[in-house]
Each structure stands twice: as C-alpha cells, then as structure tokens.
Picture 1 (cartoon, rainbow, N blue to C red):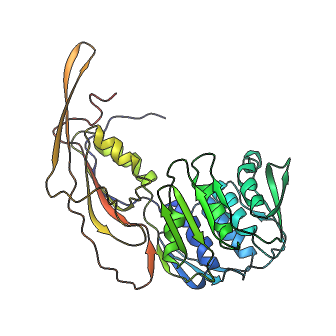
Picture 2 (cartoon, one colour):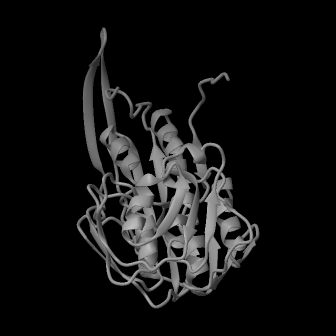
Picture 3 (cartoon, rainbow, N blue to C red):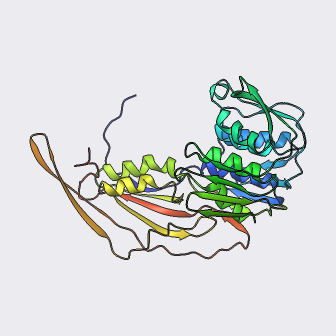
Length: 353
C-alpha cells in the first residue's frame, strides 16, 4: 500500500451506523410487544449474526435497504431453536445473548467461529450462575455454551472490570429474574443498554456507577434510529484535523458521553471541531458540555528538535439546539453534524507528538 499526501479534505460524509446500538435494537425489539422499525442499522456480519439467532428463535425480522423491521414476540415469546445458535465472530452477540438465553424456558446451544471459541466466557458465566442460570461450556470457560431452563433471581454484582458487554448480559438476564438486579461498575462503560431499556419502558436507575433494574412485566416496542458510529467517524475527524485547509462535515454522528473520548483528545490537541443540529432522543447531549455561542481559542507552543514551531488551533462548540421529536415513541442515540477543520495550514498534531 502506498499513501500519498493530498490537498485539503472538504465536503460532507455519512459513516455507517453504530454497531453496539444495532445489536441492542434487534435484541430488545425481538423481546418487545409490537413492531420495531430500525433505521441506520449497520449491515455488518456481526449484527447480521444477531438477526440470524433471533430468527432461529421464532422472531420475524425483515431486512431492506431502508430499515430493519422486527416483529416482537414479547419477553416470554421466544421459541426453542431447532439448531445451534451461531454467533459468527460477534463477541457482543455471544455475551449479550447469554443473558437472554439464561432466562428462557428451553434448552439452547450457542457457538461461534474459531475466534469466538477461543474467547473466555467464564466472566459472563459466573454472574449468570449466581443468578441461578444453568450454563455449560467447554472447559467451563469457552463456547459452545449450552443453557438449560432455570429460575433466575436478582443479585448485586460488582464487575471485576468495566465492561459494557458483561454489564449488559447481567441486566438482560435481570429482565427474567425475581427481584432487583444491581450492577456496580469500577468505572463507567458505554450505557446503550440502559438508555434503550428506558426508552422501552423498563424501570432502571443509574446512581453513579451503580445500575439497578426492576424486572418489567413487558417491553413496549419503539422505533429506533441508529446514529452513525463515532468510532467510524474518528478516522475522518483526525484526517480533517491534520490536513491543512480541510473542512469536513460528518452527518448524524452519535455522541453518547461514554463514547466521545476522541473529541476530547482532538480538542485538547487544538483541533477545531464543531457540533451542531443536536437531536434529543433516547440519549441526550452531555450535561457537562453546555452550548457555547462563541469559539474558544487555544494557542499551543512546543519545541521540535532544531526548530521552534508554533502550534495553534482553536476549539469551537456551536450552539446545541434541541430538535422536535416528530415521533411520539421513538428511540435513538443523539445525532449531530460534526465538523472537523484544519485552518491556516496549522496541524492539530503540531506540538502534541
């Protein structure tokens, strides 16, 4: 591969939908009462593995170029699959689905490709067993995993590491448990599951790093707009920040506060990034980032080898405007247009090696 320098990067782009939210949209849509319309769904192999697993458990899911339509069967409406549930190379599917399968009234076996079969699952199996789940795994740690019918009860579980997958597996099992389920995180992890739970009517409370769920009687289907994945946008944000004269706009990017580290880092390096056209759905804008009508300018200097180079850039944050919710029951992550600039030929990485 040969990479040649290029001129300024200008224009508007849209990156693929958020994978984490796409997985959860299908899972919770399948467990809800009613029809879920999902737009912006990421049509990648991992997310399609999630769709395939739920189809095998009796859920009707229609996939088109415009949307994914999930006909929910309710919390207790899944049926026993006639064959092994194959999760491909998706760790998210494997771990989150473990929590759902732990509470079912049928036996199921879940397996993935060669890579998934090497990934340890003991960290998920442990809390689910504490909830009363009957789980068997190869060497008691690896796929294939077999789940047998069992009665679950709520627990208070302190995560050994901050993990959204582990936290979500426990909370999903909590949907089927008797009594409260509480998860204590050592540090915040992405909270897409909790936010989507609230949108579907689940009573779940977050108090610092403590998340407590009350098992619901049912879930209510909502339409879900999956935002563009900020992880995919990161490559273009960096490119726009370091190529002189660039001005890129990335549309409909999710800015969940547990996912915006890339923006913080680039701004600390002097990148000019503006967020605009805020849409408040299931995931509101960061409360610790109030709208600033005026730009903030930062000059940074750093010596580099034999020469003294001036590093400069400015960070600006446009006003965030709350848009009107045009759908009375619509869930989605917040979306914004994000602009990344490199002005006056100055690079955001100068002085920040």
